[in-house]
Image (cartoon, rainbow over the protein chains, first blue to last red):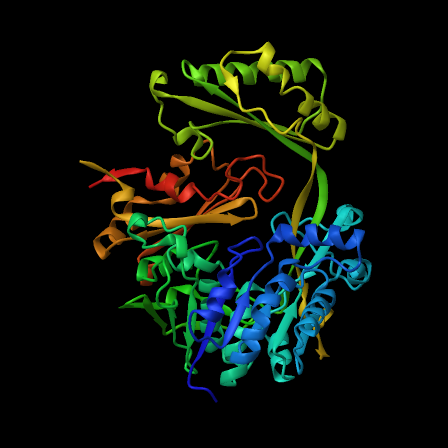
Length: 455
Length: 103
Protein backbone atom coordinates (compact mmCIF):
# COMPACT_ATOMS: atom_id res chain seq x y z
CA UNK A 1 0.00 0.00 0.00
CA UNK A 2 1.21 3.49 -0.84
CA UNK A 3 1.86 5.87 2.07
CA UNK A 4 0.25 8.76 0.27
CA UNK A 5 -1.13 9.68 -3.12
CA UNK A 6 -1.53 13.03 -4.86
CA UNK A 7 -4.77 13.64 -6.71
CA UNK A 8 -4.92 16.70 -8.96
CA UNK A 9 -8.06 18.48 -10.07
CA UNK A 10 -7.88 19.34 -13.78
CA UNK A 11 -11.29 20.83 -14.61
CA UNK A 12 -14.09 22.34 -12.55
CA UNK A 13 -16.61 22.14 -15.38
CA UNK A 14 -16.67 21.64 -19.14
CA UNK A 15 -15.25 24.92 -20.40
CA UNK A 16 -12.75 25.48 -17.60
CA UNK A 17 -9.16 26.60 -18.29
CA UNK A 18 -7.89 24.46 -21.18
CA UNK A 19 -4.31 24.40 -19.87
CA UNK A 20 -5.18 23.46 -16.28
CA UNK A 21 -4.85 19.65 -16.68
CA UNK A 22 -1.62 20.08 -18.65
CA UNK A 23 -0.18 22.25 -15.88
CA UNK A 24 -1.26 19.73 -13.23
CA UNK A 25 0.75 16.90 -14.87
CA UNK A 26 3.80 19.01 -15.77
CA UNK A 27 4.40 21.51 -12.95
CA UNK A 28 4.98 18.93 -10.22
CA UNK A 29 4.47 15.29 -9.28
CA UNK A 30 0.98 13.85 -9.05
CA UNK A 31 -0.42 10.29 -9.16
CA UNK A 32 -3.93 10.95 -10.46
CA UNK A 33 -5.58 13.59 -12.62
CA UNK A 34 -9.35 13.89 -12.08
CA UNK A 35 -11.61 15.93 -14.31
CA UNK A 36 -15.27 16.80 -13.85
CA UNK A 37 -17.00 17.81 -17.08
CA UNK A 38 -20.67 17.27 -16.31
CA UNK A 39 -23.16 19.82 -15.09
CA UNK A 40 -26.86 18.97 -15.04
CA UNK A 41 -27.54 20.82 -18.30
CA UNK A 42 -24.54 19.21 -19.98
CA UNK A 43 -26.13 15.77 -20.23
CA UNK A 44 -29.07 17.05 -22.30
CA UNK A 45 -26.75 18.94 -24.66
CA UNK A 46 -24.64 15.82 -25.12
CA UNK A 47 -27.75 13.68 -25.67
CA UNK A 48 -28.87 16.04 -28.46
CA UNK A 49 -25.43 15.74 -30.08
CA UNK A 50 -25.60 11.95 -29.86
CA UNK A 51 -29.10 11.93 -31.38
CA UNK A 52 -27.68 13.71 -34.44
CA UNK A 53 -24.50 11.64 -34.60
CA UNK A 54 -24.17 8.34 -32.68
CA UNK A 55 -20.39 8.85 -32.47
CA UNK A 56 -20.80 12.03 -30.38
CA UNK A 57 -22.21 12.74 -26.93
CA UNK A 58 -19.02 13.13 -24.87
CA UNK A 59 -16.75 16.05 -23.96
CA UNK A 60 -14.98 16.75 -27.24
CA UNK A 61 -12.15 18.47 -25.36
CA UNK A 62 -10.91 15.09 -24.14
CA UNK A 63 -9.20 13.76 -27.31
CA UNK A 64 -7.60 17.20 -27.84
CA UNK A 65 -6.35 17.21 -24.25
CA UNK A 66 -5.14 13.59 -24.39
CA UNK A 67 -3.00 14.45 -27.42
CA UNK A 68 -1.06 16.80 -25.14
CA UNK A 69 -0.97 14.86 -21.87
CA UNK A 70 -1.10 11.16 -22.73
CA UNK A 71 2.66 10.79 -23.41
CA UNK A 72 3.41 12.64 -20.15
CA UNK A 73 0.93 10.57 -18.13
CA UNK A 74 2.32 7.32 -19.56
CA UNK A 75 5.89 8.34 -18.77
CA UNK A 76 5.11 9.51 -15.23
CA UNK A 77 2.49 6.80 -14.58
CA UNK A 78 -0.27 9.32 -13.86
CA UNK A 79 -3.75 7.80 -14.08
CA UNK A 80 -6.58 9.87 -15.50
CA UNK A 81 -10.17 9.68 -14.23
CA UNK A 82 -12.98 11.67 -15.85
CA UNK A 83 -16.75 11.72 -16.20
CA UNK A 84 -16.35 13.42 -19.60
CA UNK A 85 -17.72 10.29 -21.29
CA UNK A 86 -21.10 12.01 -20.96
CA UNK A 87 -23.83 9.98 -22.66
CA UNK A 88 -21.35 8.10 -24.85
CA UNK A 89 -18.35 6.95 -22.79
CA UNK A 90 -17.49 4.18 -25.27
CA UNK A 91 -17.13 6.67 -28.13
CA UNK A 92 -15.04 8.86 -25.83
CA UNK A 93 -12.73 5.93 -25.03
CA UNK A 94 -12.47 5.07 -28.74
CA UNK A 95 -11.44 8.65 -29.48
CA UNK A 96 -8.67 8.33 -26.88
CA UNK A 97 -7.56 4.99 -28.40
CA UNK A 98 -7.33 6.75 -31.76
CA UNK A 99 -5.17 9.49 -30.22
CA UNK A 100 -2.93 6.90 -28.55
CA UNK A 101 -2.47 5.01 -31.84
CA UNK A 102 -1.48 8.21 -33.63
CA UNK A 103 1.04 8.97 -30.89
CA UNK A 104 2.49 5.44 -31.14
CA UNK A 105 1.55 4.64 -27.54
CA UNK A 106 1.23 0.95 -26.68
CA UNK A 107 -0.01 -0.96 -23.64
CA UNK A 108 -2.80 1.38 -22.78
CA UNK A 109 -5.80 0.23 -20.77
CA UNK A 110 -8.99 2.28 -20.64
CA UNK A 111 -11.84 1.31 -18.32
CA UNK A 112 -15.30 2.54 -19.28
CA UNK A 113 -18.11 2.75 -16.74
CA UNK A 114 -21.51 2.05 -18.29
CA UNK A 115 -25.06 1.54 -17.09
CA UNK A 116 -25.90 5.05 -15.84
CA UNK A 117 -27.96 5.92 -18.93
CA UNK A 118 -31.53 4.77 -18.21
CA UNK A 119 -33.34 6.82 -20.84
CA UNK A 120 -34.16 3.70 -22.85
CA UNK A 121 -35.37 1.82 -19.75
CA UNK A 122 -37.88 4.32 -18.32
CA UNK A 123 -40.96 2.17 -19.11
CA UNK A 124 -39.32 -0.90 -17.59
CA UNK A 125 -38.40 1.05 -14.45
CA UNK A 126 -41.94 2.43 -14.10
CA UNK A 127 -43.27 -1.12 -14.63
CA UNK A 128 -41.06 -2.26 -11.76
CA UNK A 129 -42.80 0.23 -9.50
CA UNK A 130 -40.49 3.25 -9.54
CA UNK A 131 -42.18 6.32 -11.05
CA UNK A 132 -39.06 8.47 -10.64
CA UNK A 133 -41.02 11.01 -8.59
CA UNK A 134 -39.59 14.51 -8.69
CA UNK A 135 -37.57 15.07 -5.51
CA UNK A 136 -38.83 18.66 -5.20
CA UNK A 137 -42.51 18.30 -6.11
CA UNK A 138 -43.21 14.58 -5.58
CA UNK A 139 -44.84 14.32 -9.03
CA UNK A 140 -44.60 11.13 -11.09
CA UNK A 141 -42.45 11.29 -14.23
CA UNK A 142 -45.15 9.67 -16.39
CA UNK A 143 -46.74 12.93 -17.74
CA UNK A 144 -43.40 14.22 -19.05
CA UNK A 145 -41.83 10.95 -20.08
CA UNK A 146 -42.28 11.54 -23.82
CA UNK A 147 -40.43 14.86 -23.51
CA UNK A 148 -37.36 13.37 -21.80
CA UNK A 149 -34.05 14.36 -23.35
CA UNK A 150 -31.81 12.45 -20.96
CA UNK A 151 -32.01 10.32 -17.82
CA UNK A 152 -28.87 9.30 -15.96
CA UNK A 153 -28.12 7.65 -12.65
CA UNK A 154 -25.32 9.11 -10.54
CA UNK A 155 -22.88 6.29 -9.83
CA UNK A 156 -20.27 6.63 -7.10
CA UNK A 157 -16.62 5.69 -6.74
CA UNK A 158 -16.82 1.89 -6.76
CA UNK A 159 -17.27 1.27 -10.51
CA UNK A 160 -14.16 3.44 -11.06
CA UNK A 161 -12.33 1.40 -8.41
CA UNK A 162 -13.24 -1.74 -10.38
CA UNK A 163 -11.70 -0.17 -13.48
CA UNK A 164 -8.50 0.68 -11.59
CA UNK A 165 -8.36 -2.89 -10.23
CA UNK A 166 -8.49 -4.14 -13.82
CA UNK A 167 -5.31 -2.18 -14.44
CA UNK A 168 -6.76 0.86 -16.19
CA UNK A 169 -4.51 3.82 -16.98
CA UNK A 170 -7.57 5.89 -17.82
CA UNK A 171 -11.12 5.59 -16.47
CA UNK A 172 -13.90 7.22 -18.47
CA UNK A 173 -17.40 7.33 -17.05
CA UNK A 174 -20.81 8.72 -17.86
CA UNK A 175 -22.80 10.30 -15.04
CA UNK A 176 -20.60 9.70 -12.01
CA UNK A 177 -20.66 11.97 -8.97
CA UNK A 178 -17.97 14.63 -9.06
CA UNK A 179 -16.81 13.47 -5.63
CA UNK A 180 -16.51 9.81 -6.72
CA UNK A 181 -13.75 10.73 -9.18
CA UNK A 182 -11.47 11.76 -6.28
CA UNK A 183 -12.63 9.15 -3.77
CA UNK A 184 -12.02 6.20 -6.13
CA UNK A 185 -8.19 6.33 -6.21
CA UNK A 186 -8.11 6.50 -2.39
CA UNK A 187 -10.29 3.38 -2.09
CA UNK A 188 -8.14 1.61 -4.68
CA UNK A 189 -4.72 2.59 -3.32
CA UNK A 190 -5.49 2.31 0.40
CA UNK A 191 -7.77 -0.74 0.28
CA UNK A 192 -10.74 1.02 1.90
CA UNK A 193 -13.89 -1.09 2.21
CA UNK A 194 -17.52 -0.36 1.35
CA UNK A 195 -18.38 -0.01 5.03
CA UNK A 196 -15.47 2.27 5.99
CA UNK A 197 -17.91 5.16 6.13
CA UNK A 198 -15.61 7.61 7.90
CA UNK A 199 -12.88 7.02 5.32
CA UNK A 200 -15.31 7.13 2.41
CA UNK A 201 -16.68 10.41 3.79
CA UNK A 202 -13.16 11.82 4.02
CA UNK A 203 -12.48 10.97 0.38
CA UNK A 204 -15.88 12.35 -0.61
CA UNK A 205 -15.12 15.67 1.07
CA UNK A 206 -11.72 15.77 -0.66
CA UNK A 207 -13.72 15.32 -3.86
CA UNK A 208 -16.06 18.18 -2.95
CA UNK A 209 -13.06 20.45 -2.41
CA UNK A 210 -11.52 19.48 -5.77
CA UNK A 211 -14.65 19.27 -7.92
CA UNK A 212 -14.89 22.95 -8.80
CA UNK A 213 -11.25 23.34 -9.79
CA UNK A 214 -9.63 26.58 -8.66
CA UNK A 215 -12.62 27.58 -6.52
CA UNK A 216 -10.68 26.10 -3.58
CA UNK A 217 -7.33 27.64 -4.54
CA UNK A 218 -8.24 31.31 -4.70
CA UNK A 219 -10.68 31.60 -7.59
CA UNK A 220 -14.10 33.21 -7.00
CA UNK A 221 -12.95 33.99 -3.46
CA UNK A 222 -15.21 36.48 -1.67
CA UNK A 223 -12.85 37.10 1.27
CA UNK A 224 -9.94 39.47 0.71
CA UNK A 225 -9.83 38.55 -2.96
CA UNK A 226 -7.41 41.30 -3.89
CA UNK A 227 -4.68 39.59 -1.86
CA UNK A 228 -4.85 36.39 -3.98
CA UNK A 229 -1.54 36.39 -5.86
CA UNK A 230 -1.18 35.93 -9.61
CA UNK A 231 -4.68 34.77 -10.52
CA UNK A 232 -3.57 34.86 -14.16
CA UNK A 233 -1.52 31.72 -13.55
CA UNK A 234 -3.75 30.20 -10.86
CA UNK A 235 -2.78 26.73 -9.69
CA UNK A 236 -5.56 24.14 -9.47
CA UNK A 237 -5.99 22.23 -6.18
CA UNK A 238 -4.28 18.96 -5.32
CA UNK A 239 -5.31 16.55 -2.54
CA UNK A 240 -2.39 14.79 -0.87
CA UNK A 241 -4.23 11.84 0.66
CA UNK A 242 -3.23 9.41 3.42
CA UNK A 243 -4.56 5.92 4.28
CA UNK A 244 -6.12 7.12 7.58
CA UNK A 245 -8.44 9.50 5.74
CA UNK A 246 -6.46 12.66 6.41
CA UNK A 247 -5.57 14.80 3.45
CA UNK A 248 -3.83 18.05 2.67
CA UNK A 249 -5.17 20.46 0.09
CA UNK A 250 -2.36 22.21 -1.75
CA UNK A 251 -1.25 23.28 -5.24
CA UNK A 252 1.95 23.13 -7.27
CA UNK A 253 4.72 25.54 -6.25
CA UNK A 254 5.31 28.49 -8.58
CA UNK A 255 1.67 28.76 -9.56
CA UNK A 256 -0.73 31.59 -8.73
CA UNK A 257 -3.69 31.53 -6.40
CA UNK A 258 -3.77 30.62 -2.73
CA UNK A 259 -4.80 27.67 -0.57
CA UNK A 260 -5.81 28.77 2.94
CA UNK A 261 -8.37 28.03 5.64
CA UNK A 262 -10.61 30.68 4.09
CA UNK A 263 -10.35 29.55 0.44
CA UNK A 264 -11.05 25.92 1.40
CA UNK A 265 -13.88 26.89 3.78
CA UNK A 266 -15.65 28.83 1.01
CA UNK A 267 -15.59 25.79 -1.24
CA UNK A 268 -16.86 23.57 1.61
CA UNK A 269 -20.07 25.59 1.87
CA UNK A 270 -20.59 25.74 -1.91
CA UNK A 271 -23.78 24.11 -3.19
CA UNK A 272 -24.50 22.11 -0.06
CA UNK A 273 -27.80 21.57 1.73
CA UNK A 274 -27.88 20.01 5.20
CA UNK A 275 -24.18 19.75 6.08
CA UNK A 276 -24.77 16.65 8.25
CA UNK A 277 -26.41 14.86 5.33
CA UNK A 278 -24.18 15.16 2.27
CA UNK A 279 -25.59 12.17 0.42
CA UNK A 280 -23.58 10.33 -2.22
CA UNK A 281 -23.91 6.78 -3.59
CA UNK A 282 -20.90 5.82 -1.44
CA UNK A 283 -21.74 7.29 1.97
CA UNK A 284 -23.43 10.14 3.82
CA UNK A 285 -20.70 12.60 4.78
CA UNK A 286 -21.00 14.91 7.78
CA UNK A 287 -19.49 18.32 6.97
CA UNK A 288 -19.85 19.43 10.60
CA UNK A 289 -17.11 16.97 11.63
CA UNK A 290 -14.47 18.38 9.27
CA UNK A 291 -11.42 19.85 10.96
CA UNK A 292 -9.33 22.32 8.99
CA UNK A 293 -5.80 23.35 9.91
CA UNK A 294 -3.99 26.00 7.88
CA UNK A 295 -0.36 24.80 7.76
CA UNK A 296 0.81 27.85 5.81
CA UNK A 297 2.60 27.80 2.43
CA UNK A 298 -0.62 26.91 0.58
CA UNK A 299 -1.23 23.76 2.61
CA UNK A 300 -4.45 23.06 4.52
CA UNK A 301 -4.79 19.85 6.54
CA UNK A 302 -8.26 18.29 6.60
CA UNK A 303 -8.93 15.56 9.17
CA UNK A 304 -11.25 13.87 11.70
CA UNK A 305 -14.08 13.44 9.19
CA UNK A 306 -17.01 11.23 10.14
CA UNK A 307 -19.72 9.71 8.00
CA UNK A 308 -22.68 7.39 7.91
CA UNK A 309 -23.80 4.46 5.70
CA UNK A 310 -24.96 5.14 2.16
CA UNK A 311 -28.68 5.17 1.39
CA UNK A 312 -30.56 2.51 -0.58
CA UNK A 313 -31.08 4.81 -3.58
CA UNK A 314 -29.14 6.39 -6.40
CA UNK A 315 -29.97 9.91 -7.50
CA UNK A 316 -31.24 10.24 -11.06
CA UNK A 317 -30.84 13.37 -13.14
CA UNK A 318 -33.38 13.72 -15.95
CA UNK A 319 -33.83 16.58 -18.40
CA UNK A 320 -36.84 17.34 -20.56
CA UNK A 321 -38.02 19.86 -23.14
CA UNK A 322 -39.94 22.74 -21.65
CA UNK A 323 -40.65 25.36 -24.30
CA UNK A 324 -38.49 28.18 -25.64
CA UNK A 325 -36.75 31.30 -24.42
CA UNK A 326 -34.93 34.30 -25.88
CA UNK A 327 -32.96 37.19 -24.46
CA UNK A 328 -32.31 40.70 -25.76
CA UNK A 329 -30.38 43.70 -24.51
CA UNK A 330 -30.04 47.41 -25.35
CA UNK A 331 -27.82 50.00 -23.67
CA UNK A 332 -29.02 53.51 -22.75
CA UNK A 333 -26.62 56.36 -21.87
CA UNK A 334 -26.67 59.37 -19.56
CA UNK A 335 -28.73 61.49 -19.09
CA UNK A 336 -31.64 59.64 -17.45
CA UNK A 337 -30.24 56.26 -18.51
CA UNK A 338 -32.41 54.27 -16.10
CA UNK A 339 -35.58 56.22 -16.87
CA UNK A 340 -35.02 55.64 -20.58
CA UNK A 341 -34.42 51.92 -20.12
CA UNK A 342 -37.58 51.62 -18.00
CA UNK A 343 -39.59 53.53 -20.63
CA UNK A 344 -38.27 51.25 -23.40
CA UNK A 345 -39.32 48.21 -21.36
CA UNK A 346 -42.86 49.57 -20.99
CA UNK A 347 -43.11 50.36 -24.72
CA UNK A 348 -41.94 46.86 -25.62
CA UNK A 349 -44.37 45.20 -23.20
CA UNK A 350 -47.27 47.23 -24.62
CA UNK A 351 -46.33 46.13 -28.15
CA UNK A 352 -46.08 42.47 -27.12
CA UNK A 353 -49.48 42.76 -25.45
CA UNK A 354 -51.04 44.35 -28.54
CA UNK A 355 -49.72 41.43 -30.60
CA UNK A 356 -51.52 38.95 -28.30
CA UNK A 357 -48.37 36.91 -27.83
CA UNK A 358 -48.31 34.20 -25.16
CA UNK A 359 -45.55 34.13 -22.57
CA UNK A 360 -45.17 32.18 -19.34
CA UNK A 361 -42.79 34.86 -18.15
CA UNK A 362 -41.29 38.16 -19.26
CA UNK A 363 -38.41 39.30 -17.10
CA UNK A 364 -36.76 42.72 -17.21
CA UNK A 365 -33.52 43.54 -15.45
CA UNK A 366 -31.38 46.67 -15.55
CA UNK A 367 -27.72 45.70 -15.76
CA UNK A 368 -25.67 48.33 -13.94
CA UNK A 369 -28.50 48.83 -11.47
CA UNK A 370 -30.33 45.73 -10.17
CA UNK A 371 -29.67 42.60 -12.24
CA UNK A 372 -27.68 40.91 -9.45
CA UNK A 373 -29.26 42.04 -6.19
CA UNK A 374 -32.78 43.02 -7.28
CA UNK A 375 -34.68 45.00 -4.63
CA UNK A 376 -31.54 45.15 -2.42
CA UNK A 377 -29.84 47.45 -4.94
CA UNK A 378 -29.08 51.01 -3.82
CA UNK A 379 -31.21 53.77 -5.27
CA UNK A 380 -28.67 55.96 -7.04
CA UNK A 381 -28.99 59.62 -7.95
CA UNK A 382 -29.77 59.13 -11.62
CA UNK A 383 -27.40 61.91 -12.66
CA UNK A 384 -24.53 59.69 -11.43
CA UNK A 385 -25.56 56.72 -13.61
CA UNK A 386 -23.52 56.73 -16.82
CA UNK A 387 -25.33 53.96 -18.63
CA UNK A 388 -27.80 51.12 -18.13
CA UNK A 389 -28.20 47.91 -20.08
CA UNK A 390 -31.81 46.85 -20.45
CA UNK A 391 -31.96 43.05 -20.41
CA UNK A 392 -35.21 41.30 -21.24
CA UNK A 393 -35.88 37.58 -21.27
CA UNK A 394 -39.05 35.77 -22.35
CA UNK A 395 -40.15 32.16 -22.01
CA UNK A 396 -43.07 30.42 -23.71
CA UNK A 397 -44.32 27.06 -24.91
CA UNK A 398 -45.28 28.89 -28.11
CA UNK A 399 -42.30 29.09 -30.46
CA UNK A 400 -43.90 31.80 -32.60
CA UNK A 401 -44.37 34.15 -29.65
CA UNK A 402 -40.71 33.87 -28.71
CA UNK A 403 -39.63 34.33 -32.32
CA UNK A 404 -41.80 37.45 -32.71
CA UNK A 405 -40.33 38.91 -29.49
CA UNK A 406 -36.95 38.74 -31.22
CA UNK A 407 -38.28 40.91 -34.03
CA UNK A 408 -39.52 43.65 -31.67
CA UNK A 409 -36.12 44.60 -30.19
CA UNK A 410 -34.22 46.45 -32.95
CA UNK A 411 -37.24 48.67 -33.79
CA UNK A 412 -36.94 50.18 -30.29
CA UNK A 413 -33.82 52.00 -31.45
CA UNK A 414 -35.69 54.17 -33.96
CA UNK A 415 -39.11 54.12 -32.26
CA UNK A 416 -38.25 54.49 -28.56
CA UNK A 417 -36.21 56.59 -26.10
CA UNK A 418 -32.94 58.21 -27.33
CA UNK A 419 -29.18 57.63 -26.91
CA UNK A 420 -29.45 53.88 -27.24
CA UNK A 421 -26.90 51.45 -28.63
CA UNK A 422 -25.60 47.93 -28.23
CA UNK A 423 -27.87 46.02 -30.57
CA UNK A 424 -25.66 43.64 -32.48
CA UNK A 425 -25.70 40.11 -33.75
CA UNK A 426 -29.14 40.16 -35.37
CA UNK A 427 -32.53 39.22 -33.99
CA UNK A 428 -32.48 37.07 -30.84
CA UNK A 429 -33.45 33.51 -31.79
CA UNK A 430 -35.61 31.21 -29.66
CA UNK A 431 -33.60 28.53 -27.90
CA UNK A 432 -35.00 25.34 -26.39
CA UNK A 433 -35.53 25.40 -22.64
CA UNK A 434 -34.33 22.28 -20.87
CA UNK A 435 -35.90 21.63 -17.50
CA UNK A 436 -34.35 19.45 -14.87
CA UNK A 437 -36.06 16.54 -13.10
CA UNK A 438 -34.25 15.12 -10.04
CA UNK A 439 -35.42 11.72 -8.77
CA UNK A 440 -34.34 8.68 -6.79
CA UNK A 441 -34.13 5.06 -7.90
CA UNK A 442 -33.57 1.93 -5.76
CA UNK A 443 -30.00 0.73 -6.16
CA UNK A 444 -31.33 -2.72 -7.01
CA UNK A 445 -32.82 -1.47 -10.30
CA UNK A 446 -29.54 -0.40 -11.89
CA UNK A 447 -26.17 -2.04 -12.20
CA UNK A 448 -22.94 -0.34 -13.20
CA UNK A 449 -20.88 -2.20 -15.77
CA UNK A 450 -17.16 -1.79 -16.30
CA UNK A 451 -15.69 -2.53 -19.71
CA UNK A 452 -11.97 -2.64 -20.43
CA UNK A 453 -10.57 -1.45 -23.75
CA UNK A 454 -6.94 -2.42 -24.34
CA UNK A 455 -4.45 -1.15 -26.85
CA UNK B 1 -23.74 51.34 15.83
CA UNK B 2 -24.46 49.37 12.67
CA UNK B 3 -21.87 47.48 10.65
CA UNK B 4 -22.15 45.57 7.41
CA UNK B 5 -22.01 41.78 7.62
CA UNK B 6 -19.29 42.08 4.96
CA UNK B 7 -16.92 43.40 7.66
CA UNK B 8 -17.06 40.24 9.78
CA UNK B 9 -17.76 37.44 7.30
CA UNK B 10 -17.26 36.11 3.78
CA UNK B 11 -19.05 33.39 1.86
CA UNK B 12 -20.08 31.72 -1.37
CA UNK B 13 -23.39 30.99 -3.05
CA UNK B 14 -24.67 28.70 -5.77
CA UNK B 15 -27.69 26.82 -7.03
CA UNK B 16 -29.48 23.65 -6.04
CA UNK B 17 -32.29 23.50 -8.57
CA UNK B 18 -34.59 26.46 -7.96
CA UNK B 19 -33.08 26.96 -4.48
CA UNK B 20 -30.04 29.09 -3.80
CA UNK B 21 -27.44 27.99 -1.27
CA UNK B 22 -25.62 30.73 0.62
CA UNK B 23 -22.73 29.78 2.92
CA UNK B 24 -21.55 32.53 5.25
CA UNK B 25 -18.24 32.14 7.12
CA UNK B 26 -17.23 34.38 10.05
CA UNK B 27 -13.61 35.54 10.19
CA UNK B 28 -13.33 34.75 13.92
CA UNK B 29 -15.18 33.13 16.85
CA UNK B 30 -16.70 36.41 18.02
CA UNK B 31 -18.02 36.98 14.52
CA UNK B 32 -19.49 33.48 14.46
CA UNK B 33 -21.41 34.16 17.69
CA UNK B 34 -22.70 37.35 16.11
CA UNK B 35 -23.87 35.77 12.84
CA UNK B 36 -25.49 32.89 14.75
CA UNK B 37 -27.50 35.48 16.70
CA UNK B 38 -28.23 37.94 13.88
CA UNK B 39 -28.82 35.72 10.86
CA UNK B 40 -32.10 34.13 11.85
CA UNK B 41 -34.17 32.53 9.09
CA UNK B 42 -36.78 35.28 9.57
CA UNK B 43 -34.21 38.06 9.07
CA UNK B 44 -32.70 36.37 6.03
CA UNK B 45 -36.16 35.82 4.51
CA UNK B 46 -36.99 39.52 5.11
CA UNK B 47 -33.63 40.62 3.64
CA UNK B 48 -34.38 38.71 0.43
CA UNK B 49 -37.95 39.98 0.08
CA UNK B 50 -38.76 40.13 -3.64
CA UNK B 51 -35.97 37.62 -4.41
CA UNK B 52 -36.73 34.57 -2.26
CA UNK B 53 -40.35 33.39 -2.57
CA UNK B 54 -40.03 30.19 -0.54
CA UNK B 55 -38.86 28.85 2.78
CA UNK B 56 -35.44 29.70 4.23
CA UNK B 57 -33.58 26.84 5.92
CA UNK B 58 -30.53 27.40 8.15
CA UNK B 59 -27.78 24.96 9.10
CA UNK B 60 -24.77 25.45 11.38
CA UNK B 61 -21.17 24.39 10.76
CA UNK B 62 -19.44 25.55 13.97
CA UNK B 63 -16.28 23.68 12.95
CA UNK B 64 -15.58 26.24 10.22
CA UNK B 65 -17.52 29.14 11.85
CA UNK B 66 -20.12 28.94 9.10
CA UNK B 67 -23.86 29.04 8.53
CA UNK B 68 -25.46 27.56 5.45
CA UNK B 69 -28.78 28.82 4.13
CA UNK B 70 -31.07 27.24 1.58
CA UNK B 71 -33.40 29.78 -0.03
CA UNK B 72 -36.19 27.90 -1.79
CA UNK B 73 -38.07 29.24 -4.83
CA UNK B 74 -35.44 31.89 -5.50
CA UNK B 75 -33.82 31.36 -8.90
CA UNK B 76 -36.75 31.82 -11.28
CA UNK B 77 -37.06 28.09 -11.94
CA UNK B 78 -33.33 27.35 -11.94
CA UNK B 79 -31.16 25.83 -14.68
CA UNK B 80 -31.99 26.88 -18.23
CA UNK B 81 -35.61 27.62 -17.28
CA UNK B 82 -34.60 30.75 -15.37
CA UNK B 83 -34.66 34.10 -17.16
CA UNK B 84 -32.55 35.73 -14.45
CA UNK B 85 -29.19 37.29 -15.24
CA UNK B 86 -27.90 35.51 -12.13
CA UNK B 87 -29.75 32.25 -12.73
CA UNK B 88 -27.37 30.30 -10.48
CA UNK B 89 -27.44 32.70 -7.53
CA UNK B 90 -23.69 33.29 -7.77
CA UNK B 91 -23.96 36.86 -6.45
CA UNK B 92 -26.40 36.15 -3.59
CA UNK B 93 -23.67 35.58 -0.95
CA UNK B 94 -22.54 39.15 -1.64
CA UNK B 95 -26.19 40.24 -1.45
CA UNK B 96 -26.51 38.77 2.05
CA UNK B 97 -23.24 40.43 3.12
CA UNK B 98 -24.92 43.81 2.44
CA UNK B 99 -27.04 43.26 5.57
CA UNK B 100 -26.49 45.75 8.39
CA UNK B 101 -26.24 44.34 11.91
CA UNK B 102 -25.53 45.76 15.38
CA UNK B 103 -21.80 46.04 16.00
